[in-house]
Length: 342
Image 1 (tube, one colour):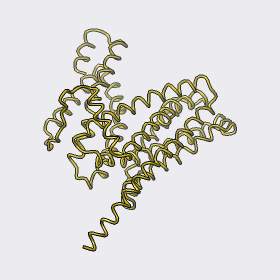
Image 2 (cartoon, rainbow, N blue to C red):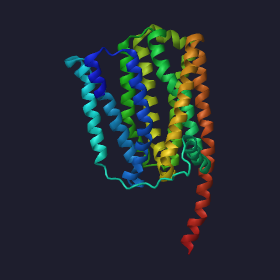
Image 3 (cartoon, helix red, strand yellow):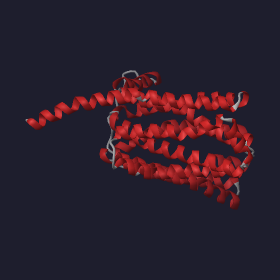
Image 4 (tube, rainbow, N blue to C red):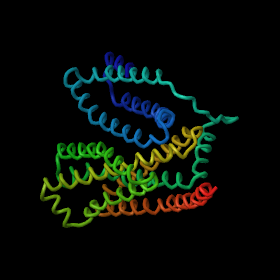
């Protein structure tokens, strides 16, 4: 960002430089994200991971709300050029904070002949050890194929192109999404006191499917006419769905992260997260292409039908998790009883 600021003083910043910067940031994130997720279990006690993940989600979503506002303030006062050095200073502060962390070293398995393909292959071995992990990751892939792209592409398309909404309408819907994400900490707190981790994961997936049910009405001609004829109802409709979607997804996400952080061994966590992020990105890419084609060339009902099928597949994909988890619990009960008798 500092280099970009210096360049901006000498020549205008064009699209090629912006694209190069975005690609560079994305590449850096590929290294930082797995390491960051791996770090959490090393900083927090195992029994406190759920609360820590919930708090992290709240902080991240709060910053996500404040950052655009603060960026707009800086932009309106000093222009685009000043945002670059401000961003650079914030980045250096992050580097300083990271350098002062004191974390117990996690043992790393080094291959005799290290290579990217070998590292990926070792990351995939985690999926073979526990069918529950495989089930959850594949469930996440379905989310990134069917649900995320529908919300990220479909909502702005429908609000502005199909139902004639304004940029302000879409801005309100996006704000409600953030409110739903922030409220997830209350959902986590409520469920954490009543159910175990496996039960909360099922509740999260089931609630996410329920949150999608109102979207199925978009396939009905009467609903489309009502949304086109009433801007207020249209805004309320998409805001309510957005709130429920992001509330349930972030609540489920906290339990999902806690599960693999407590299930995958520390030495393999980095490889596992890297592979998981990769397959999620591939799923999201496929979903963007799928819905882009559907919204461009097909009636809206087809896109709605696809997201409905995708959510049903998510429920089916969770069945192996429930079966294996039930088997593990049944096998552990006799052992506990025998210990008590002794």
